[in-house]
Length: 166
Image 1: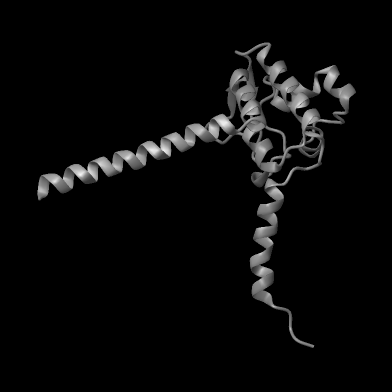
Image 2: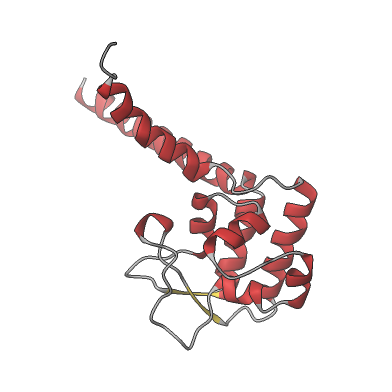
């Protein structure tokens, strides 16, 4: 019997973890997912200046609650809505929210997670993040346009430097 291939085991574990991070928690129909996410964004848009507490990212122990008590999180806003609870939202844990909205860890982090330097955000920004998760095309176009602009700028600078020197 041959010994197990340790290098394959060491390299496959991070890949499985990364693939799991981007995979949705539960498969729901796209129409239900869109309806649920838009309902969540609408709840946040009702009071756009409300301060929303951001959670820790999933890779940093995101299931733990923050220390800020006065401000609700985006998950708390969803949980306080009776319509979403009737539709099947079972609780306020990260796992239950991911399953209900059909989100991956990365998508939920994009919506509801913050960092040590930005622990809060206005509700309208969280609602915009929900819409970007639901329809990422616009955000992807903006990023592509910015990358294209940087490439064109670098080409122009190189052209000017080349023609000035020679």
